[in-house]
Each structure stands twice: as structure tokens, then as C-alpha cells.
Image (tube, rainbow, N blue to C red; front, side, top):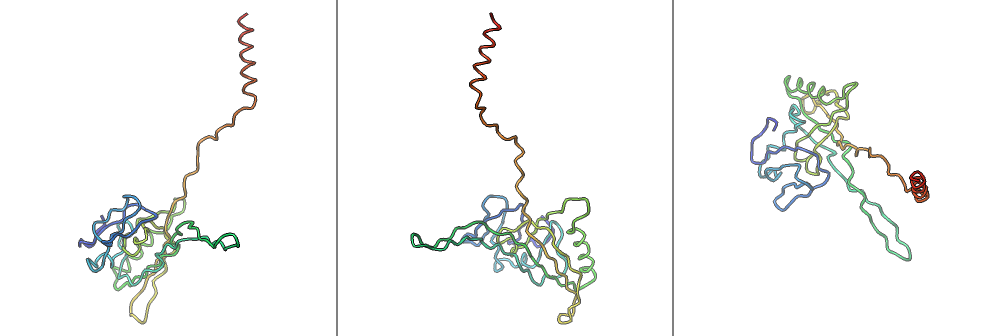
Length: 209
């Protein structure tokens, strides 16, 4: 578990799960047992997890101002009605969160330096597979988003209104493609199998004479 608050509501996402539900107690329950949650993700029970975003074991530096785009809309196909049947809807899938934007205030030199460290951790390196990271925050994990890759780490900008430097990190939900079927294709039945078997039998019989 990464360093962070130790309140009753603290938890850490472990592995991705594309779907889940929230039970009557307010606890997110994935379809599987791959995301252990120790208590309801309820800020009225413990607000501390809601103020911290962890990427693997690194906390996003500064003071998180906003998190946007952590949504997974459901995709539906709508079939228009005809004289013979009514209009209908067919569920296709849950879309991925393609643009999760996290804005953080960098109030001091330590937070500013930490922003550089996070940038270097997130960005892919030439010649290596782009990394995927476990992300931990109730608002992001709410819909089952627990693994992300980076789209952009914006350079810090001075915000006159707040009198502080602001950094913005844009992430995309990571969902690896299914591995290709490496098994050999099954061969169809040989239409001449019976003839070949009969010929083989005759040949063996002749050889025995």
C-alpha cells in the first residue's frame, strides 16, 4: 500500500475490473474479487482518500483541485421501430475513459519538483513498452477505472487568480487487447479420407501376400 492516510476509508486499487456496482453500504464491488475495498468510499465516513491521488506508489504532488473525465458511458445501439415491431435498444459495451484530467496546485518548491518526478515516471520511454499504472482515488475508481497510461503532462502554468502554479495531467484508461489466438487452425475433414483408407488397406493386404 502506498504511503498516505490511514483512516477507516483508506483503500488501494489492485487490478483492473471493467464493471462493478455500489451496494447499499456504498462500497464499490467489482465483478470479481480483484479490487479489495476495506470500507465504503464515502467522504462522510472518511474524507481523506478523496484528497489524494496515487499513481502506483507516487502521490500526485500538490493540492488536487479537480478531476474530470473519469466516466465510462454505456454504449447503446438504437433500432428504429417499424410497422411490424417497436423501436428497441441493445447494450453494446462500456466505453473507456479516454481523457481523465487531473489539475493540481503546486504551492511550493517541493511540490514543483515532485511534478517533474511524476512526469518522468508517467511518460513512455523510447524502445520500451508504454507503461500502465495503477491509479488510486475514489472518484476515479468509482466506475472501475484502476489502470491508466499518460496522454499528456502539461507544463505548470501560473494562475493569477489563485496566486499559485497549476499542473494538469491527462490520462487514458488502460485496457490491454486480448491476446491473439496462437493455436493452429483446425484442419477440415479430408473429403478423400475414406478412399485413402481403403487404398491403404488394400496396399497392406497386397504386401502381405
